[in-house]
Amino acid sequence: MSGFATSPPVRLLARIGALAIGLLAALGRVAMFAGRTIISIFAPPYYPARYLEQMAQIGWFSLPVVGLTAIFTGAALAQQIYTGGSRFNAQSTVPAIVVFGMVRELGPVLVGLMVAGRVASAMAAEIGTMRVTEQLDAMTTLRTDPFQYLIAPRLVAAMISLPLMVMIANAIGLFGGYLLSVEKLGFNAANYLNVTRQYLEWDDIVTSEVKAGVFGFFIALMGCYHGYHTRGGAAGVGRATTDAVVSAFILILFSNLLLTVLAFG
Amino acid sequence: MTEPKIALNDLAKAFGDKVVLDGVTLAVEPGESMAIIGGSGTGKSVMLKCILGLIQPDGGTIRIDGEDTTHLRGRARREVQAKFGMLFQGGALFDSLPIWRNVTFGLTRGRAMDSGRMRRLAEENLERVGLGADVLDLRPSELSGGMQKRVSLARAIAPRPQIIFFDEPTTGLDPIMADVINDLIRSLVEGLGVTAVTITHDMTSARKIAHRVAMLYQGRIIWHGPCDRLYDSRNPYVDQFVQGRADGPIQ
Ligand SMILES: Nc1ncnc2c1ncn2[C@@H]1O[C@H](COP(=O)(O)OP(=O)(O)OP(=O)(O)O)[C@@H](O)[C@H]1O
Ligand SMILES: [Mg+2]
Image (cartoon, rainbow over all chains, first blue to last red; front, side, top):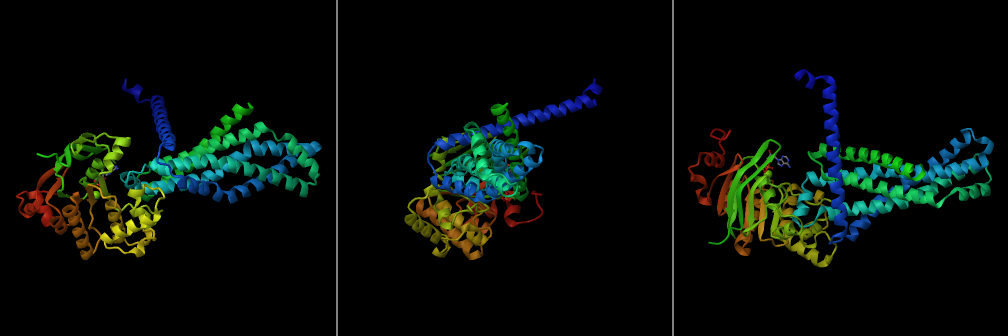
Protein backbone atom coordinates (compact mmCIF):
# COMPACT_ATOMS: atom_id res chain seq x y z
CA MET A 1 0.00 0.00 0.00
CA SER A 2 2.86 2.36 0.80
CA GLY A 3 3.95 2.06 -2.82
CA PHE A 4 0.65 3.60 -3.90
CA ALA A 5 0.82 6.57 -1.52
CA THR A 6 4.31 7.53 -2.65
CA SER A 7 3.88 6.83 -6.37
CA PRO A 8 4.65 9.87 -8.55
CA PRO A 9 1.08 10.61 -9.75
CA VAL A 10 -0.27 10.50 -6.20
CA ARG A 11 2.51 12.74 -4.97
CA LEU A 12 1.78 15.16 -7.78
CA LEU A 13 -1.90 15.22 -6.83
CA ALA A 14 -0.97 15.84 -3.20
CA ARG A 15 1.24 18.73 -4.28
CA ILE A 16 -1.54 20.26 -6.37
CA GLY A 17 -3.95 19.79 -3.49
CA ALA A 18 -1.59 21.51 -1.06
CA LEU A 19 -1.09 24.35 -3.51
CA ALA A 20 -4.86 24.79 -3.96
CA ILE A 21 -5.41 24.85 -0.19
CA GLY A 22 -2.62 27.40 0.20
CA LEU A 23 -4.17 29.56 -2.50
CA LEU A 24 -7.60 29.42 -0.86
CA ALA A 25 -6.12 30.32 2.52
CA ALA A 26 -4.30 33.29 0.99
CA LEU A 27 -7.53 34.41 -0.71
CA GLY A 28 -9.31 34.22 2.63
CA ARG A 29 -6.63 36.33 4.31
CA VAL A 30 -6.78 38.95 1.56
CA ALA A 31 -10.58 39.05 1.78
CA MET A 32 -10.43 39.54 5.56
CA PHE A 33 -7.88 42.29 5.11
CA ALA A 34 -10.09 44.03 2.53
CA GLY A 35 -13.12 43.71 4.81
CA ARG A 36 -11.27 45.21 7.74
CA THR A 37 -10.08 48.09 5.56
CA ILE A 38 -13.58 48.84 4.26
CA ILE A 39 -15.03 48.85 7.78
CA SER A 40 -12.29 51.21 8.95
CA ILE A 41 -13.16 53.71 6.19
CA PHE A 42 -16.46 54.44 7.94
CA ALA A 43 -15.34 54.38 11.57
CA PRO A 44 -14.13 57.57 13.30
CA PRO A 45 -11.67 59.17 13.80
CA TYR A 46 -11.25 60.41 10.24
CA TYR A 47 -8.02 61.61 8.69
CA PRO A 48 -8.90 63.94 5.77
CA ALA A 49 -5.31 65.14 5.46
CA ARG A 50 -4.10 61.55 4.93
CA TYR A 51 -6.66 61.05 2.13
CA LEU A 52 -5.57 64.21 0.32
CA GLU A 53 -1.90 63.31 0.71
CA GLN A 54 -2.53 59.91 -0.84
CA MET A 55 -4.57 61.38 -3.68
CA ALA A 56 -1.57 63.56 -4.50
CA GLN A 57 0.87 60.65 -4.20
CA ILE A 58 -1.17 58.25 -6.31
CA GLY A 59 -2.88 60.56 -8.77
CA TRP A 60 -1.02 63.78 -9.25
CA PHE A 61 2.54 62.45 -9.18
CA SER A 62 1.65 59.59 -11.53
CA LEU A 63 0.28 61.93 -14.20
CA PRO A 64 3.52 62.51 -16.16
CA VAL A 65 4.30 58.85 -16.62
CA VAL A 66 0.67 58.04 -17.38
CA GLY A 67 0.42 60.87 -19.92
CA LEU A 68 3.58 59.79 -21.73
CA THR A 69 2.48 56.18 -21.88
CA ALA A 70 -0.91 57.16 -23.25
CA ILE A 71 0.27 59.48 -26.01
CA PHE A 72 2.91 57.07 -27.33
CA THR A 73 0.56 54.11 -27.21
CA GLY A 74 -2.28 55.99 -28.92
CA ALA A 75 0.03 57.01 -31.74
CA ALA A 76 1.56 53.55 -32.11
CA LEU A 77 -1.93 52.04 -32.17
CA ALA A 78 -2.98 54.32 -35.03
CA GLN A 79 0.12 53.41 -37.00
CA GLN A 80 -0.45 49.67 -36.53
CA ILE A 81 -4.07 49.79 -37.59
CA TYR A 82 -3.13 51.80 -40.62
CA THR A 83 -0.34 49.42 -41.64
CA GLY A 84 -2.23 46.36 -40.54
CA GLY A 85 -4.18 45.79 -43.72
CA SER A 86 -7.27 47.97 -43.56
CA ARG A 87 -5.83 50.68 -45.79
CA PHE A 88 -8.79 50.36 -48.16
CA ASN A 89 -11.08 51.95 -45.58
CA ALA A 90 -8.49 53.68 -43.43
CA GLN A 91 -10.34 56.98 -43.03
CA SER A 92 -12.97 55.44 -40.77
CA THR A 93 -11.24 52.29 -39.48
CA VAL A 94 -8.26 53.98 -37.88
CA PRO A 95 -10.15 56.43 -35.63
CA ALA A 96 -12.78 53.83 -34.78
CA ILE A 97 -10.30 51.20 -33.67
CA VAL A 98 -8.18 53.75 -31.84
CA VAL A 99 -11.30 54.66 -29.85
CA PHE A 100 -12.20 51.05 -29.07
CA GLY A 101 -8.67 50.00 -28.32
CA MET A 102 -7.83 52.94 -26.14
CA VAL A 103 -11.01 53.38 -24.16
CA ARG A 104 -12.01 49.76 -23.75
CA GLU A 105 -8.62 48.15 -23.12
CA LEU A 106 -5.37 50.03 -23.37
CA GLY A 107 -6.31 53.12 -21.36
CA PRO A 108 -7.35 51.36 -18.18
CA VAL A 109 -4.86 48.48 -18.46
CA LEU A 110 -1.84 50.68 -19.15
CA VAL A 111 -2.71 53.16 -16.41
CA GLY A 112 -3.37 50.26 -14.06
CA LEU A 113 -0.01 48.64 -14.78
CA MET A 114 1.97 51.88 -14.67
CA VAL A 115 0.42 52.97 -11.39
CA ALA A 116 0.81 49.47 -9.95
CA GLY A 117 4.52 49.60 -10.70
CA ARG A 118 4.87 53.01 -9.13
CA VAL A 119 2.42 52.93 -6.26
CA ALA A 120 1.86 49.33 -5.12
CA SER A 121 5.61 48.97 -4.66
CA ALA A 122 5.88 52.24 -2.77
CA MET A 123 3.00 51.30 -0.45
CA ALA A 124 4.46 47.88 0.27
CA ALA A 125 7.91 49.33 0.93
CA GLU A 126 6.65 52.08 3.21
CA ILE A 127 4.22 50.01 5.26
CA GLY A 128 6.63 47.05 5.26
CA THR A 129 9.41 49.23 6.67
CA MET A 130 7.01 50.47 9.33
CA ARG A 131 6.23 46.85 10.20
CA VAL A 132 9.83 45.69 10.55
CA THR A 133 10.88 48.78 12.53
CA GLU A 134 7.90 48.34 14.90
CA GLN A 135 6.32 51.64 13.84
CA LEU A 136 3.00 49.85 13.28
CA ASP A 137 3.18 48.44 16.81
CA ALA A 138 4.05 51.88 18.16
CA MET A 139 1.08 53.37 16.33
CA THR A 140 -1.25 50.79 17.84
CA THR A 141 0.01 51.45 21.37
CA LEU A 142 -0.60 55.16 20.75
CA ARG A 143 -4.21 54.15 20.09
CA THR A 144 -4.21 54.84 16.39
CA ASP A 145 -5.39 52.07 14.10
CA PRO A 146 -3.02 51.60 11.13
CA PHE A 147 -6.04 50.51 9.07
CA GLN A 148 -7.65 53.90 9.63
CA TYR A 149 -4.52 56.01 9.47
CA LEU A 150 -2.53 54.28 6.72
CA ILE A 151 -4.51 51.72 4.79
CA ALA A 152 -8.03 53.12 4.31
CA PRO A 153 -6.70 56.44 2.89
CA ARG A 154 -4.59 54.53 0.37
CA LEU A 155 -7.45 52.31 -0.75
CA VAL A 156 -9.95 55.14 -1.15
CA ALA A 157 -7.45 57.47 -2.81
CA ALA A 158 -6.48 54.78 -5.33
CA MET A 159 -10.12 54.04 -6.16
CA ILE A 160 -10.80 57.73 -6.79
CA SER A 161 -7.53 58.58 -8.54
CA LEU A 162 -7.46 55.73 -11.00
CA PRO A 163 -10.75 56.59 -12.79
CA LEU A 164 -9.65 60.23 -13.04
CA MET A 165 -6.31 59.21 -14.47
CA VAL A 166 -7.85 56.77 -16.91
CA MET A 167 -10.16 59.54 -18.13
CA ILE A 168 -7.12 61.72 -18.77
CA ALA A 169 -5.10 58.89 -20.29
CA ASN A 170 -7.95 58.02 -22.67
CA ALA A 171 -8.13 61.60 -23.88
CA ILE A 172 -4.37 61.85 -24.32
CA GLY A 173 -4.28 58.47 -26.08
CA LEU A 174 -6.96 59.50 -28.54
CA PHE A 175 -5.08 62.70 -29.11
CA GLY A 176 -1.89 60.71 -29.80
CA GLY A 177 -3.70 58.68 -32.43
CA TYR A 178 -5.18 61.81 -33.96
CA LEU A 179 -1.82 63.54 -34.06
CA LEU A 180 -0.08 60.69 -35.84
CA SER A 181 -2.95 60.12 -38.27
CA VAL A 182 -3.25 63.75 -39.25
CA GLU A 183 0.41 64.76 -39.19
CA LYS A 184 2.05 61.63 -40.56
CA LEU A 185 -0.60 59.55 -42.34
CA GLY A 186 -2.31 62.51 -43.96
CA PHE A 187 -5.82 62.10 -42.57
CA ASN A 188 -8.36 64.88 -42.76
CA ALA A 189 -8.53 66.41 -39.29
CA ALA A 190 -12.22 67.27 -39.18
CA ASN A 191 -13.21 63.93 -40.59
CA TYR A 192 -11.00 62.07 -38.07
CA LEU A 193 -12.59 63.89 -35.17
CA ASN A 194 -16.06 63.26 -36.51
CA VAL A 195 -15.52 59.52 -36.74
CA THR A 196 -13.92 59.53 -33.29
CA ARG A 197 -16.96 61.22 -31.81
CA GLN A 198 -19.28 58.85 -33.63
CA TYR A 199 -17.59 55.75 -32.19
CA LEU A 200 -16.97 57.09 -28.73
CA GLU A 201 -19.81 55.51 -26.76
CA TRP A 202 -21.07 56.20 -23.27
CA ASP A 203 -21.09 52.49 -22.37
CA ASP A 204 -17.43 52.14 -23.27
CA ILE A 205 -16.51 55.10 -21.10
CA VAL A 206 -18.43 53.65 -18.17
CA THR A 207 -16.71 50.29 -18.61
CA SER A 208 -13.36 52.04 -18.77
CA GLU A 209 -14.05 53.85 -15.50
CA VAL A 210 -15.34 50.73 -13.75
CA LYS A 211 -12.19 48.90 -14.75
CA ALA A 212 -10.11 51.78 -13.42
CA GLY A 213 -11.88 51.70 -10.05
CA VAL A 214 -11.38 47.95 -9.75
CA PHE A 215 -7.69 48.24 -10.68
CA GLY A 216 -7.22 51.02 -8.13
CA PHE A 217 -8.74 48.77 -5.48
CA PHE A 218 -6.38 45.90 -6.33
CA ILE A 219 -3.30 48.12 -6.50
CA ALA A 220 -3.82 49.60 -3.04
CA LEU A 221 -5.00 46.29 -1.59
CA MET A 222 -1.91 44.41 -2.78
CA GLY A 223 0.48 47.20 -1.78
CA CYS A 224 -0.97 47.48 1.72
CA TYR A 225 -1.56 43.77 2.27
CA HIS A 226 1.99 42.76 1.43
CA GLY A 227 3.42 45.71 3.35
CA TYR A 228 1.33 44.95 6.43
CA HIS A 229 2.36 41.29 6.48
CA THR A 230 6.07 41.91 5.93
CA ARG A 231 8.46 39.83 8.02
CA GLY A 232 12.18 39.66 8.26
CA GLY A 233 14.03 42.96 7.96
CA ALA A 234 15.22 44.61 4.78
CA ALA A 235 15.06 41.40 2.76
CA GLY A 236 11.45 40.99 3.86
CA VAL A 237 10.62 44.50 2.64
CA GLY A 238 12.19 43.66 -0.71
CA ARG A 239 10.08 40.52 -1.00
CA ALA A 240 6.92 42.38 -0.02
CA THR A 241 7.56 44.99 -2.71
CA THR A 242 8.04 42.41 -5.43
CA ASP A 243 5.03 40.38 -4.31
CA ALA A 244 2.86 43.50 -4.25
CA VAL A 245 3.73 44.48 -7.82
CA VAL A 246 3.49 40.97 -9.27
CA SER A 247 0.17 40.18 -7.59
CA ALA A 248 -1.27 43.58 -8.55
CA PHE A 249 -0.26 42.96 -12.20
CA ILE A 250 -1.87 39.53 -12.21
CA LEU A 251 -5.07 40.78 -10.58
CA ILE A 252 -5.31 43.71 -12.99
CA LEU A 253 -4.85 41.58 -16.10
CA PHE A 254 -7.17 38.86 -14.86
CA SER A 255 -9.96 41.16 -13.70
CA ASN A 256 -9.61 43.09 -16.97
CA LEU A 257 -10.31 39.91 -18.90
CA LEU A 258 -13.32 39.14 -16.70
CA LEU A 259 -14.73 42.64 -17.05
CA THR A 260 -14.14 42.67 -20.80
CA VAL A 261 -15.95 39.35 -21.22
CA LEU A 262 -18.78 40.57 -18.99
CA ALA A 263 -19.19 43.88 -20.79
CA PHE A 264 -18.54 42.91 -24.40
CA GLY A 265 -18.83 39.09 -24.54
CA MET B 1 -5.03 43.68 49.81
CA THR B 2 -5.20 45.80 46.66
CA GLU B 3 -5.31 44.40 43.15
CA PRO B 4 -1.94 44.28 41.42
CA LYS B 5 -1.64 46.80 38.59
CA ILE B 6 -0.43 44.09 36.23
CA ALA B 7 -0.90 40.40 36.90
CA LEU B 8 0.39 37.75 34.53
CA ASN B 9 -0.69 34.22 35.16
CA ASP B 10 0.90 31.25 33.40
CA LEU B 11 1.46 33.25 30.22
CA ALA B 12 2.57 31.11 27.26
CA LYS B 13 3.64 31.96 23.74
CA ALA B 14 5.35 29.94 21.03
CA PHE B 15 6.29 30.93 17.48
CA GLY B 16 5.85 27.79 15.41
CA ASP B 17 7.52 25.09 17.50
CA LYS B 18 9.82 27.57 19.21
CA VAL B 19 8.55 28.07 22.77
CA VAL B 20 9.34 31.58 23.98
CA LEU B 21 7.15 32.10 27.05
CA ASP B 22 6.45 28.94 29.02
CA GLY B 23 4.23 29.92 31.94
CA VAL B 24 5.22 33.41 33.08
CA THR B 25 3.60 34.39 36.36
CA LEU B 26 4.32 37.85 37.71
CA ALA B 27 2.54 40.64 39.60
CA VAL B 28 3.42 44.33 39.57
CA GLU B 29 1.85 46.48 42.28
CA PRO B 30 0.48 49.99 41.68
CA GLY B 31 3.24 52.58 41.83
CA GLU B 32 5.91 49.93 41.76
CA SER B 33 8.96 49.98 39.53
CA MET B 34 9.94 46.53 38.34
CA ALA B 35 13.03 45.64 36.34
CA ILE B 36 13.11 42.57 34.13
CA ILE B 37 16.48 41.02 33.41
CA GLY B 38 17.38 37.99 31.36
CA GLY B 39 19.55 36.86 28.47
CA SER B 40 19.15 38.02 24.92
CA GLY B 41 16.31 36.26 23.13
CA THR B 42 14.63 34.93 26.28
CA GLY B 43 11.36 36.66 25.41
CA LYS B 44 11.43 39.84 27.47
CA SER B 45 10.18 41.99 24.61
CA VAL B 46 7.61 39.36 23.64
CA MET B 47 6.29 39.44 27.21
CA LEU B 48 5.76 43.21 27.03
CA LYS B 49 4.10 42.93 23.63
CA CYS B 50 1.69 40.37 25.04
CA ILE B 51 0.71 42.77 27.83
CA LEU B 52 0.27 45.56 25.30
CA GLY B 53 -1.98 43.36 23.16
CA LEU B 54 0.37 43.44 20.17
CA ILE B 55 0.93 39.68 20.36
CA GLN B 56 -1.82 37.20 21.26
CA PRO B 57 -0.54 34.76 23.89
CA ASP B 58 -1.29 31.06 23.35
CA GLY B 59 -2.30 30.56 26.95
CA GLY B 60 -2.55 32.13 30.37
CA THR B 61 -4.15 35.40 31.42
CA ILE B 62 -3.20 39.06 31.68
CA ARG B 63 -5.02 41.26 34.17
CA ILE B 64 -4.72 45.03 34.29
CA ASP B 65 -6.25 46.58 37.43
CA GLY B 66 -8.02 43.29 37.94
CA GLU B 67 -9.63 43.31 34.49
CA ASP B 68 -8.87 40.36 32.24
CA THR B 69 -7.46 41.95 29.07
CA THR B 70 -6.03 38.84 27.45
CA HIS B 71 -8.44 38.71 24.54
CA LEU B 72 -9.73 42.26 24.29
CA ARG B 73 -10.19 43.76 20.83
CA GLY B 74 -11.36 46.94 19.16
CA ARG B 75 -12.68 49.73 21.37
CA ALA B 76 -12.22 47.85 24.67
CA ARG B 77 -8.60 47.18 23.72
CA ARG B 78 -7.99 50.84 22.94
CA GLU B 79 -9.44 51.85 26.29
CA VAL B 80 -6.94 49.64 28.09
CA GLN B 81 -4.16 50.93 25.85
CA ALA B 82 -4.85 54.44 27.13
CA LYS B 83 -3.26 53.30 30.39
CA PHE B 84 -0.04 52.25 28.70
CA GLY B 85 3.04 53.98 27.40
CA MET B 86 5.76 52.02 25.67
CA LEU B 87 9.35 52.76 24.79
CA PHE B 88 10.25 50.33 22.02
CA GLN B 89 13.67 48.76 22.00
CA GLY B 90 14.47 50.19 18.56
CA GLY B 91 12.78 53.55 19.15
CA ALA B 92 10.13 52.95 16.46
CA LEU B 93 9.73 56.64 15.64
CA PHE B 94 7.51 57.50 12.67
CA ASP B 95 10.09 58.49 10.10
CA SER B 96 7.62 60.34 7.89
CA LEU B 97 6.75 62.82 10.66
CA PRO B 98 8.79 65.62 12.26
CA ILE B 99 9.93 65.17 15.86
CA TRP B 100 7.23 67.32 17.43
CA ARG B 101 4.48 65.37 15.69
CA ASN B 102 6.12 62.16 16.85
CA VAL B 103 6.17 63.30 20.45
CA THR B 104 2.53 64.40 20.43
CA PHE B 105 1.19 61.48 18.37
CA GLY B 106 -0.40 59.87 21.42
CA LEU B 107 -2.34 63.08 22.10
CA THR B 108 -3.43 63.93 18.56
CA ARG B 109 -3.71 60.29 17.51
CA GLY B 110 -2.36 61.39 14.16
CA ARG B 111 -4.82 64.21 13.53
CA ALA B 112 -3.64 67.67 12.64
CA MET B 113 -4.94 69.73 15.54
CA ASP B 114 -3.88 72.64 17.69
CA SER B 115 -0.31 72.85 16.34
CA GLY B 116 0.75 75.70 18.61
CA ARG B 117 -0.19 73.91 21.79
CA MET B 118 1.16 70.60 20.51
CA ARG B 119 4.54 72.12 19.71
CA ARG B 120 4.74 73.52 23.23
CA LEU B 121 3.81 70.15 24.70
CA ALA B 122 6.44 68.47 22.54
CA GLU B 123 9.01 70.97 23.75
CA GLU B 124 8.13 70.34 27.40
CA ASN B 125 8.39 66.60 27.04
CA LEU B 126 11.63 66.79 25.08
CA GLU B 127 13.11 68.92 27.82
CA ARG B 128 12.42 66.16 30.32
CA VAL B 129 14.60 63.77 28.31
CA GLY B 130 17.35 66.34 27.90
CA LEU B 131 16.62 67.56 24.37
CA GLY B 132 16.18 71.17 23.26
CA ALA B 133 13.69 72.91 21.00
CA ASP B 134 16.18 72.79 18.13
CA VAL B 135 15.15 69.22 17.27
CA LEU B 136 11.40 69.96 17.01
CA ASP B 137 11.31 70.24 13.23
CA LEU B 138 13.90 67.61 12.37
CA ARG B 139 13.05 64.16 11.08
CA PRO B 140 13.98 61.05 13.10
CA SER B 141 16.62 60.05 10.52
CA GLU B 142 18.47 63.30 11.23
CA LEU B 143 19.06 62.36 14.88
CA SER B 144 21.69 60.12 16.44
CA GLY B 145 20.61 56.74 17.82
CA GLY B 146 20.68 57.94 21.43
CA MET B 147 18.68 61.05 20.57
CA GLN B 148 16.08 58.93 18.77
CA LYS B 149 15.76 56.79 21.87
CA ARG B 150 15.14 59.88 24.00
CA VAL B 151 12.55 61.25 21.56
CA SER B 152 10.85 57.90 21.71
CA LEU B 153 10.88 58.13 25.49
CA ALA B 154 9.32 61.59 25.29
CA ARG B 155 6.63 60.19 23.01
CA ALA B 156 5.87 57.42 25.50
CA ILE B 157 5.47 59.75 28.48
CA ALA B 158 3.68 62.63 26.72
CA PRO B 159 0.12 61.25 27.14
CA ARG B 160 0.86 60.75 30.89
CA PRO B 161 0.05 57.04 31.03
CA GLN B 162 -0.43 55.19 34.33
CA ILE B 163 1.79 52.30 33.30
CA ILE B 164 4.98 52.68 31.29
CA PHE B 165 7.07 49.92 29.76
CA PHE B 166 10.66 50.70 28.97
CA ASP B 167 12.44 48.26 26.68
CA GLU B 168 16.14 48.89 27.33
CA PRO B 169 15.90 52.65 27.95
CA THR B 170 19.61 53.19 28.59
CA THR B 171 21.11 50.96 25.90
CA GLY B 172 23.06 53.07 23.42
CA LEU B 173 23.24 56.14 25.67
CA ASP B 174 26.40 57.64 27.13
CA PRO B 175 26.77 57.18 30.93
CA ILE B 176 25.64 60.71 31.74
CA MET B 177 22.55 60.54 29.54
CA ALA B 178 21.82 57.09 30.94
CA ASP B 179 21.73 58.65 34.38
CA VAL B 180 19.42 61.43 33.19
CA ILE B 181 17.04 58.74 31.98
CA ASN B 182 17.36 56.81 35.24
CA ASP B 183 16.44 59.97 37.13
CA LEU B 184 13.51 60.57 34.81
CA ILE B 185 12.12 57.08 35.39
CA ARG B 186 12.54 57.50 39.14
CA SER B 187 10.77 60.83 39.10
CA LEU B 188 7.91 59.39 37.05
CA VAL B 189 7.47 56.66 39.63
CA GLU B 190 8.04 58.68 42.76
CA GLY B 191 6.57 61.98 41.63
CA LEU B 192 3.65 60.91 39.47
CA GLY B 193 2.90 57.47 40.86
CA VAL B 194 3.47 55.75 37.54
CA THR B 195 3.84 51.98 37.49
CA ALA B 196 6.97 51.11 35.54
CA VAL B 197 8.27 47.90 34.00
CA THR B 198 11.77 48.21 32.62
CA ILE B 199 13.72 45.67 30.64
CA THR B 200 17.40 46.25 31.11
CA HIS B 201 20.82 44.67 30.77
CA ASP B 202 22.29 47.53 32.78
CA MET B 203 22.62 46.47 36.43
CA THR B 204 23.51 49.96 37.62
CA SER B 205 20.34 51.25 36.05
CA ALA B 206 18.29 48.38 37.47
CA ARG B 207 19.51 49.10 40.96
CA LYS B 208 18.84 52.77 40.58
CA ILE B 209 15.32 52.69 39.16
CA ALA B 210 13.70 49.49 40.37
CA HIS B 211 12.05 48.44 43.59
CA ARG B 212 12.02 44.83 42.52
CA VAL B 213 13.82 42.75 39.93
CA ALA B 214 12.58 39.65 38.12
CA MET B 215 14.66 37.35 36.00
CA LEU B 216 13.31 35.60 32.92
CA TYR B 217 15.02 32.39 31.91
CA GLN B 218 13.81 29.70 29.50
CA GLY B 219 10.34 31.17 29.32
CA ARG B 220 9.72 31.48 33.08
CA ILE B 221 10.36 33.91 35.89
CA ILE B 222 12.99 31.97 37.82
CA TRP B 223 13.64 34.58 40.50
CA HIS B 224 12.17 37.81 41.75
CA GLY B 225 13.01 39.86 44.76
CA PRO B 226 13.75 43.31 46.06
CA CYS B 227 16.46 45.21 44.31
CA ASP B 228 18.97 45.06 47.16
CA ARG B 229 18.84 41.25 47.08
CA LEU B 230 20.04 41.20 43.48
CA TYR B 231 23.65 40.49 44.46
CA ASP B 232 22.87 37.95 47.17
CA SER B 233 19.91 36.16 45.65
CA ARG B 234 21.37 32.68 46.39
CA ASN B 235 20.16 31.76 42.92
CA PRO B 236 23.03 30.45 40.78
CA TYR B 237 21.38 31.70 37.55
CA VAL B 238 20.90 35.22 38.88
CA ASP B 239 24.41 35.25 40.33
CA GLN B 240 25.96 34.25 37.05
CA PHE B 241 23.88 36.82 35.17
CA VAL B 242 24.45 39.85 37.39
CA GLN B 243 28.14 39.10 37.70
CA GLY B 244 28.43 38.51 33.97
CA ARG B 245 30.34 35.23 34.17
CA ALA B 246 30.63 33.00 31.13
CA ASP B 247 30.73 29.79 33.19
CA GLY B 248 27.81 28.66 35.28
CA PRO B 249 24.39 27.04 34.90
CA ILE B 250 23.38 29.35 32.00
CA GLN B 251 25.00 28.17 28.79
N1 LIG C 1 7.04 38.15 15.68
C1 LIG C 1 7.86 37.12 15.92
N2 LIG C 1 7.83 36.03 15.13
C2 LIG C 1 8.64 34.98 15.37
N3 LIG C 1 9.53 34.92 16.36
C3 LIG C 1 9.62 35.96 17.18
C4 LIG C 1 8.80 37.12 17.01
N4 LIG C 1 9.10 38.00 17.97
C5 LIG C 1 10.08 37.42 18.71
N5 LIG C 1 10.38 36.21 18.23
C6 LIG C 1 11.37 35.28 18.83
O1 LIG C 1 11.13 35.21 20.20
C7 LIG C 1 12.35 35.15 20.92
C8 LIG C 1 12.36 36.19 22.02
O2 LIG C 1 12.43 37.49 21.44
P1 LIG C 1 12.48 38.81 22.29
O3 LIG C 1 12.53 39.93 21.31
O4 LIG C 1 11.39 38.81 23.27
O5 LIG C 1 13.87 38.68 23.05
P2 LIG C 1 14.43 39.61 24.18
O6 LIG C 1 14.40 38.83 25.45
O7 LIG C 1 13.72 40.91 24.16
O8 LIG C 1 15.95 39.78 23.73
P3 LIG C 1 16.87 41.09 23.69
O9 LIG C 1 17.38 41.28 25.07
O10 LIG C 1 17.96 40.73 22.76
O11 LIG C 1 16.02 42.22 23.22
C9 LIG C 1 13.46 35.35 19.91
O12 LIG C 1 14.07 34.10 19.69
C10 LIG C 1 12.77 35.81 18.67
O13 LIG C 1 13.38 35.25 17.54
MG1 LIG D 1 14.10 42.75 23.48
